[in-house]
Image (cartoon, rainbow, N blue to C red; front, side):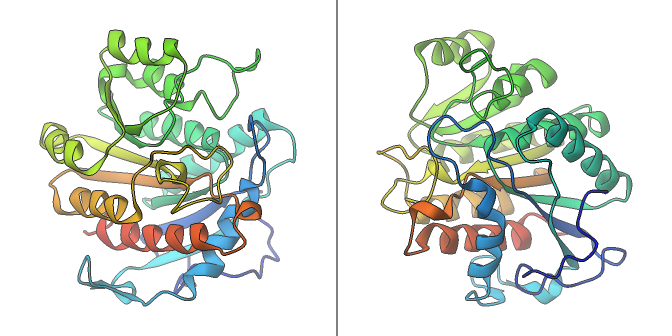
Length: 291
């Protein structure tokens, strides 16, 4: 229903374990139907997989090897091209299945709207859910050009679902005046421009909660990640994002799932964006899924 039964494409490095025996499932959501600037992130998941082949299986950051994690790469979902509403429903249904089967999900986007059905599914299982959002953009619009299903709306939807006080955004440097006003007035947490240091301060307050982490690759400066749909100057370095992933891994919070979105390969012929993204996914896989 969700995937091509004949899928024989590349998998994330060492991700060919069986679904039944795996604790973690990586899956791609090749959707970029609502982007407001440059499309192409539907090609992101597969390019991240291809780039992962150049990685070492061992992480010196986490002092852990991929052979220590039982994980399965399910490939890309078969989403109906151009139909955002149906695609969202399909992602939520698949997430419901993953959570019912006790799997830790790692989603690869795809535009940022794909995080919304995942959060919706997560909240059905975890009533104490908190969301850590790492991004250049606030994504707090109620609609874009009259359309509520937009890659600029998922965090606003998350706030309305789980309560703005349970949403924590970092690295934000772009958005409408109204989005920043909403963040200030609603009670959500928003840190502008930087990620790692303020994250260290916030994490102790999330102890005991179920935490979902969503990372938009455009939190990086375009110098580090030109391959994204809406690049924004003034971003953080790859080093800082790696540090943020480590900070989360070394904390005592309970991460229950994560995603990395908005890698758009057509705009980066050097593939540095996909290469960086694959390393981030490796660190998330090794650092956030410890039993």
